[in-house]
Image (cartoon, rainbow, N blue to C red; front, side, top):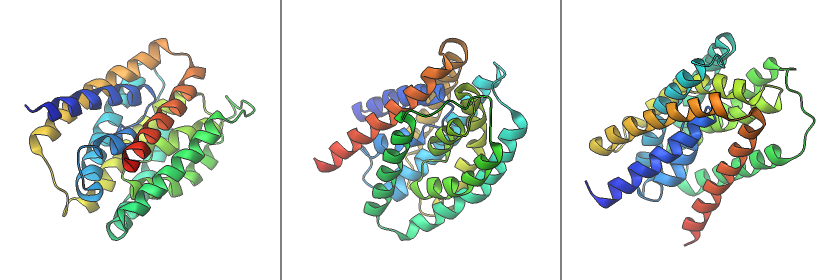
Amino acid sequence: MTQEFIIVTIGLFILATISGMLGLGVAFAAVPFLGLFFPDLIHQVQPLSLLLNGVTAMFSAYGFARSGFVDWRKAITLAIVTTLSAPIGAYLVQFIDQVYVWFVYFVSVIYLAYRLFKPVKERMGKENFRVAIILAIPISILSGFLGVGPGFLLMPTLILVGFDPKRAAGINAFAVTPPSFSSLIPHLPTAQWNITLTLLLLIVGALGSFAGARITSLYIPSKRVKQIFGVLIVVMTLYKIYTLMG
């Protein structure tokens, strides 16, 4: 195993653990991270990130379900909406320059960070699920376009429309699993895989995401989940901007 393989594996395990704590698939953090090692965003980074996203989200959902944080009716409804919508964005990205893809990614993250850190009146317990369903459609199309799965946009959306962060994380983890795989379909004809590395990352990603979900379920207060999410996406994005400028 090369040194680069070791670095990628350890880094992915850490990212999967952190994303699992938030009920996310790992793709939103894996895209900029894997972009440091693979030159082709569309044919290498995005397919691998989507596959990892589906597996890590699935194990994160299992971890939250163990503590009763998955509202199955709402999670399944969102999963249907996101699964049908995400492939549209994944198809469109095949025809767009990578520079514009990164631009959309950064704009999305900046907006989310602003909304998460902006002081808002707490609405926990007053869940507006209808609004969440409506917003899930454009969120899924955009996330399919970015190759990150809808979790990193859907999770804060659920919080902003009134869901308790732990419930939002549990619902989100299940809801983003199927669309991660459906978004992968348009990439399959042109995807480039390193089979050994892919299998290794799937294993460590599954372990890390399950462990992260259990940590949040048992030990982390709900009010901290939102803050952790905001900090994570800002750090990862700033790091990617730094590498692109270098």
